[in-house]
Length: 156
Image 1 (cartoon, one colour):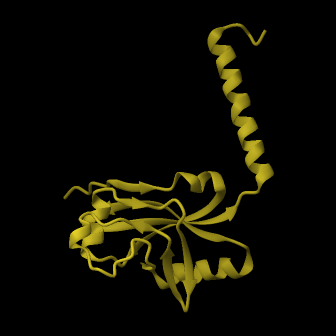
Image 2: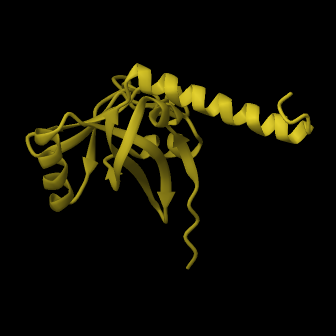
Image 3: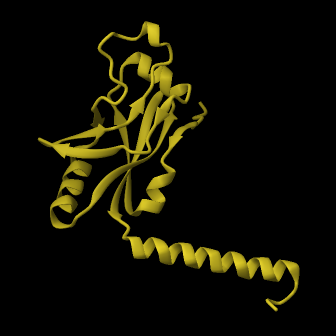
């Protein structure tokens, strides 16, 4: 039995906005038509985040747009709060980290594993503006060095 893993959504902003400390593979409680929409790529993770409340984890602001708007329930909201399926040990570990440090739970990617839709959650620390500027300057300097080596002018 082969396990084809197809990535449906990826949160590119997360790597720039946050420093990722740990990642967890979790499941989601979804409706049937939401699964179909996700498999067709109609999902957006860009502004979403996870929250722990009453010893349960929830995914907020994850937009799953209906594949067929006429066949969805009348009261369906694309950005509704979805329950995250996570083990008790992982939840206890994350809760302990939350209380001791100022960390955030951010979804990184949404993919399938067999017949199930899985979410990669990351325990992150917010990157400060000056750290982002340093990162951009370092990347630009590396590009300039590579460009000068490629052209062969030696930087002169």
